[in-house]
Image (tube, rainbow, N blue to C red):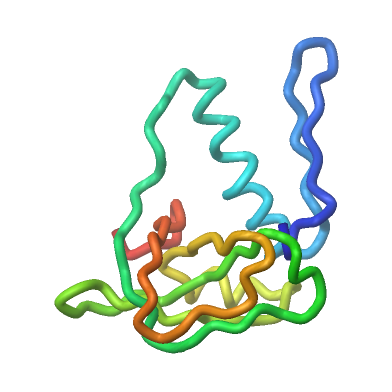
Length: 131
């Protein structure tokens, strides 16, 4: 996962441990993509987070580094006949990106670009989203 590469999971004496990377955006990515599903599973919940089908409002291009990793793309949502997801970017050490985001979507490994109008399934960010 790009921005969150050094994430790990373990178990010590039956207690689950989630190891998160240092930069805030990488830690959030790892927690949302790895931690939240583990917590739901351990809590007995089979429900996924709230998601919204959207179209991209502008193109998105992957960073050149780690293009063969899964990517987490944060978005700001706006209303339309179908919700529109505008990709946002920011420094990995900054909370601003997370506070500006309504949600995120995952881009599979080796996908380097998405076009305006492409369909994406946006997961709302727990605690940050407008919902």
